[in-house]
Image (cartoon, rainbow, N blue to C red; front, side):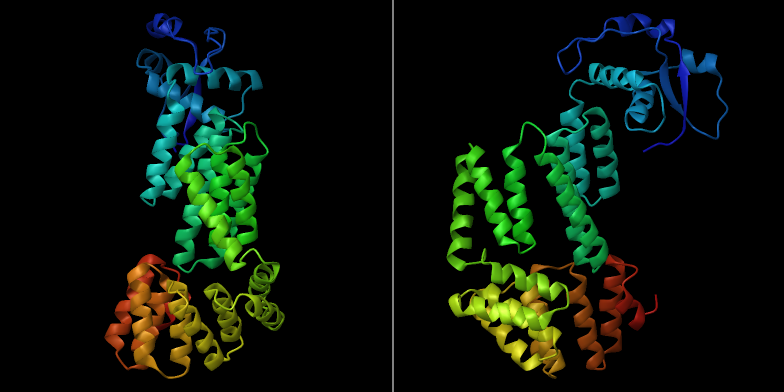
Length: 375
């Protein structure tokens, strides 16, 4: 987003007739030009400005840029001017909501999260506290957090997941409540292994939903959660305890969960995770193998299995698990780093360097890769 000076100009004669002919704004409330309010124009800081020349060469793009800068908080003006400029922009660009929303989503999908964030900031200025804008903002924050998590930037990812949750929560407090908010929150909490929360929001979605395909999908997810018992408080609390470094307390809870749900792979994964963090690698490996046997062949499960195998000296089998995980998640830094560690243990320096180089391409600040590879 450009960040130059704002110059305020009187409405030039060359644009006066065009401005008078502007249609009603996108709110349908009508828009009339107030010629006593100057037009804001954004200019480069490092260039001298000839106001007369600027007035003569003024374009709609320059006016839009200045107004957008103001409604997004870039320059302080009278509050009534902010609302006036907002409505002016909507009169000039009545489809700006759909146009910019689509552009933000495309930028996020292409990994340009900074660009997507700038567009969302503009939409928040033009449509303050609007559920649809906040929903897109939360989705983009969530997507970026997921990318950071795969790159091994766990602290940054965690903070961004928290921001996404806050954005979702803010959107839920506004009217009208969009069914899609509940739908996406269900998946947000599922991805965070909070199945009790996911079930709650999926049920809220069903109260408002109209899309038959999505309704059937959500009903199947809820049925799966209930059948597996993943909304059980023992399961949810055990995960929280492990994240807090309280593996001993987590083990007691997850054992209780598995007594009732011995065929649920997620429970065996959590048990293995707690045991692995206690460095009980043989017991952890047995738990992860059970999770794999029950259908939990996720990249995370295979990565954890490989860590235990490495610690127990079975490098060949560890490599097989990591290669299988990498096929499903080719940009996961943890998996690539562990392949590098296996190569080091085998004395294959060049192969290890290749893995760590790839890690640094994804995350230039990865501490493990920097320890073993000097760019």
